[in-house]
Image (tube, rainbow, N blue to C red; front, side, top):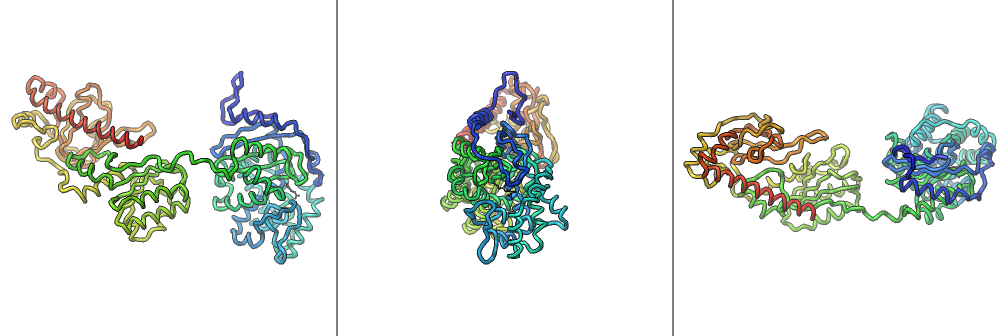
Length: 624
Ligand code: DON
């Protein structure tokens, strides 16, 4: 009897089960005593099953597996193979061709009923034997062996390990499968199966005889819940576009003439097999596998159904009770009036952005973007007053954007283009998100959208746009002398001349490193021409830009005043001219030229105070 919590640390002496493991253990105890139902015997080999076997497994879409009971004992997959082979048929023949041969309507009949559409002879759905045999006939491959390999490989990909056929069960079913053979010939009669049905029947009997265990079932279900990718192996078992069709027929037809009751009581797409297995799928979240060979009169595992019902009601998993959105799609919203880029700007430009910053709205998005989650954002932007010039949408924390959301976003760009507004999309993982976005844009609207690799580059882009519209003067890219430098504001001409005599002039090429983190603080830098960025290296690699400075600004004061070493790197973004005041000369000012020292310290403090004020308003805006 397995009591494991896969991927968790080995049991300490006083084994403490995780809450989910403890829950499964309680559930197992609760239903272990149930003895109703009978193992299948119409396939003689199946009659050998032990009705006491009982396993429960939950697998999450991020690869955690919780299991209790008989979870590693092999048994044949039987009808649970049907939705998987239906997926293979969809991949090999396409949705249209498959729908010509197999319907998607619940039959309300037993799994082995000859439920064919009057006239066309089309099986009503792929979950009853008739539909499943038709699906087997649509599996691609030049030979029987190739088609069998195609099917076994597909089921193995779902389970995340190589599986094999139980030849004894196959033989037992093949030799007693008269009813299925009759169904096969009915399908041949209606040309649903276009040639001798025997190969399709053989493939069907083989697929039903694939050996699995309860853990495999949960991983099969979790693969269906994870858009077709096995959450442990990472291998894709079926194309994502076919997950909808597969889960739809599992929902409406997976439990045969119990399907309605199942949706009502359990509310998860599911599939049972006469080998005693049941899989249940909670899309996007988890998969459940239960194994207990004692079946009810419909061929569904008695304990399996009870366990799924209990898990669904006790953990609130009914898919028609969607989880309350854990958090809004908008993680943070603010405007450039309260949050700015990392580019330090002269007071004049700061005042323009204070006044017009609300014309650039920023939305930091998160989670899955679907119509329902993106609609409120688009409405907010669309309903914003005409004064809005820029809408910035940040995608760093967006996990997925479906086609509908992508189209809606393109629609937003069209609207904004028509209103002369710009949309800025930042930190979009190109190729992963919004793949179809560009194809949804026309040349005119394409000019109204800008992709920026970093959020703050997006903010800077908008700031530039606002300053181009509303600033009467722009900061010069160079200043002639220290008299124009911000650190010398209010200094006397004599003090400036004294400083001019003390400083050294230096040039740096674009990309050059001017100051390195950890270096001793040897000078105060007066930026005279060009731009530099203050950056820190991130532990996980890469750099984070803390600020960008331009002509008339200073840097290197912190370590100089507070002592210690440089706390960040400073890199020249363009060709740069600087004046540097050495640490000793700076220190001597206290005695040699106190008025200049006071002026410098005053202006340094003023700039630090401005930064503190701006950061405070940003924190308030981001926490808001
Ligand atoms: O065709 C049959 O009868 C079996 N191979 C599969 C039936 C089955 O699993 C029905 N499910 N509950």
